[in-house]
Length: 406
Image (cartoon, rainbow, N blue to C red; front, side, top):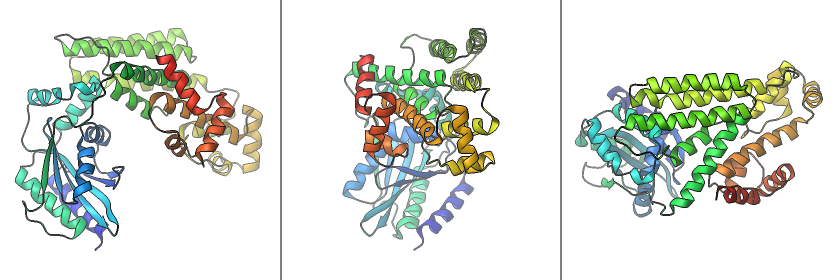
């Protein structure tokens, strides 16, 4: 049975029905592919609301389809593609709504997750994504899931034969130590501001980490819009000062910051306001990056520098940079050293280590995971390179950062 061909046909059929999205995970729960335009926010919801953990827990005892429902009203369905040794892939359909929900109903459902302290900006993105989800009656959704199960496994099911259901109001374990959480927030926010100072355009992961850790300024009041404006204003102020430290002139930084704060005050609803922090953050980073661009670099060398800084996880060779700049490898290698003072390999190592510092400060990833993510051949080589550049081992650096946060 050609599973991928069957799945491709299923996708086409679902696209005819509307916005029914299909996600592919490996047996360990790592996302491999998705056709969802709101992949980041809905994929995060699938994880933080406990659906992924429940799916993997279900898989430990049986490989039959399972429907996963949340208190927010979103519903997912998972089926499992078998292999000779167990399960090859999990295919997840959704999310959908069984019926239309009012904003009040969604707010009430979301309130059960308040202990997770997810950010207001992320919540607003999620609410907008949920409003775009299709309404599919449960009987129809079960039929779709049965069809998907057949495409993945070749097995026929009746609607009630082997489809389990699980409601997940609060499956995500809550960390009781609020002080530790605050330390993580501080470390993540410091990494976020360091990226502004460095004009680092590769900021997406750090921004996502920070938005999930912090819910903004903890001001509680009757007006959610006012609370959101306070958080955005504080964030804008911090980013503005970091940009000045990164080399942007105070006149330019304060003028830009004032404009964004005024836009914040002029916002009439949470949906309009939610778009502002990312636009502001991206704008400041790009301006710092531009002002930090070395005017002494030739166009070819600047192209190489930009490419290296935007691809810290890649395995970059001098030949790749030469092709990018349109010169021979010997010429670009010699020119790069003359203009920057670094060999290409040393500069690549320096950029990777700077990225590692962000990951060490703002995530709980293991040293092996960080080494793998940044393309180091081994963990020991990563540690050796890190100590050579920073003067501390990665573990020592992480401990120092956490100690500062405390």
